[in-house]
Length: 171
Ligand code: HEM
Ligand code: HEM
Image 1 (cartoon, rainbow, N blue to C red):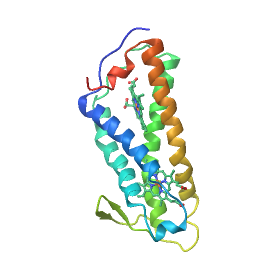
Image 2: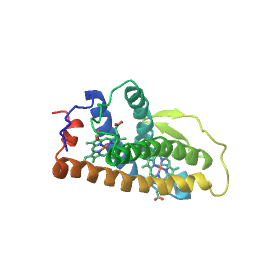
Image 3: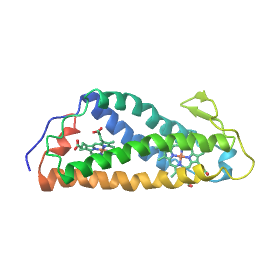
Image 4: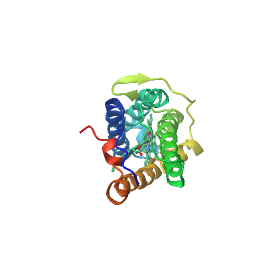
């Protein structure tokens, strides 16, 4: 396997690691159930929304050539890598949006590090609904997907020795 140490741009690398920290932070500060109406987990909201904020410049950079060419043939491994990254991006967009929706349905005010945001759905009295349940389950599932992604990155680096980890490192 040829080495491909062409790096992501510095800003893409910083966004990658900030996003990873925000996802883990959002998971660690998450809670469910109606008691969150009295005591909303504001840090969970802020860290989760940071993921959504960070995805905007990230996608713009990605679409304008901020990611290096994978430099491999369009083989199965390259296609699986792309599919894995697309899945991660879908989670990174869907999770904060479904969380925001769930909070709105529960009538819980949402803020982003002190900045109050509008509700994106009308509040309901009973259970917040299917999207809230999807959010709770996907919120944990993304950690499995990201864990598999990290294992694949380590496998590339230490078994295939193709320099993958350097592509996402500042030094
Ligand atoms: C919640 C945690 C994480 C998320 C959401 C995440 C997400 C992503 C995404 C979406 C990409 C694709 C970038 C692009 O081409 O646009 C990527 C690339 C990459 N990630 Fe992560 N990542 C996480 C954690 C990690 C960890 C822990 C490692 C290292 C062990 C890692 C190593 C890499 C590497 C090396 C690449 C570049 C792969 C390549 O270009 O072939 N990531 N990550
Ligand atoms: C990457 C970002 C996020 C992750 C990983 C995540 C993860 C989770 C997890 C695992 C739960 C279930 C906790 C439990 O049942 O004990 C949860 C619940 C919840 N999250 Fe998030 N979340 C994220 C973003 C957000 C955002 C941005 C908001 C709101 C603006 C939000 C609002 C909520 C609400 C309201 C619940 C409770 C839902 C219910 O009880 O039905 N989340 N989140």
